[in-house]
Image 1 (cartoon, rainbow, N blue to C red):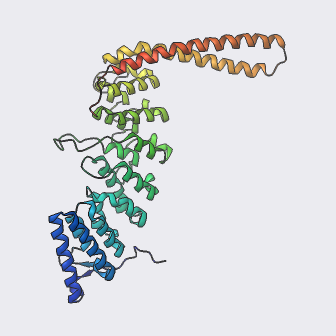
Image 2 (image 1 turned 135 degrees about the vertical axis):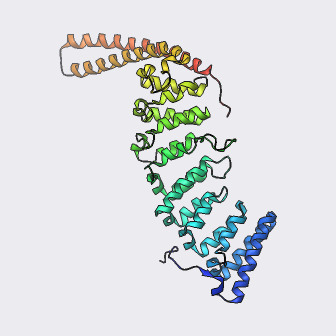
Image 3 (image 1 turned 90 degrees about the vertical axis):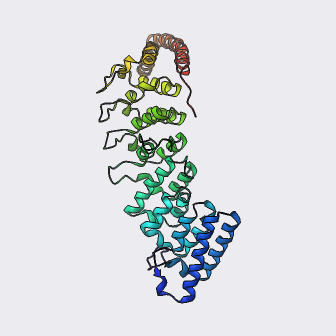
Length: 396
């Protein structure tokens, strides 16, 4: 079977006859004129015209003008609208090797509308992404998702791409070895003073968890070489910036599934809680702070390299007594559960009825005490949630 991406040279107009040259020029003129008119019916007519012409003469897709422009490049530039995707696909199918060049695939991946063609390209021509340039485009595609306020790259489009090209889950940035998961969180963080309007969006929690479940497990523990950030640090940065439910859900997911980074310092000497402590006026931030302190109680007093410790934050001060009591009750329950388990194993090795009777009494008492202690936990949990609910709601 012939590889559709097998290389064949493009042809300049001076290498072909007058009739073919004229047909190319007519098509190019039509593409440019419709691009300026933007009438729906005109696009459909142009799509049919291009398909018919290229079907009859596939060589048209290989031709380039004196300025080096192909019909495909002209279509991409002039028609940043999804109605033109039929024509773009037709031209690519007539000459797939065009995708191996840097110009066309770069234009598609970076266009606010045409980037939605990336899943189709990954399905039909996955080898495009097997070289260094193609791998770089995967990370550029993630960036388009982070700018979905201005692009058409939705989480569904991104999922379709990764399903078509699952090798992307294990890719890393060439510059600093950053994983896909770190990149999708990092890209959502606005760079100060880049724009007066917000162009970026926080990563959607459902998408992040979908990707995390398909990436290598050790990605959850890794740190970015520049900055020493873990995924949890980046998720907390996103939460501090957006005050959004998605960022909050991602933080909770990471704490539940990989709690070690809760205790990890970045290169600035910051724990994840330090990133959030100045945003405790919002409900979603408060909920994550409670989770962080439950996992790492000692971080209450942890002094960052600069700034105040969490213990100086009024909200964190107010929840500490409840968290301390909650932790003591949970430790009591765990201790009793452990003793019950150990004694059960020991009693199983003896036939002494007095020993068995004594254990039965202890087991009944321990079970009753555990139930009573668990009943005390519920009001504490409710109180903590009420204190979180007193915070501001996000602007989502």
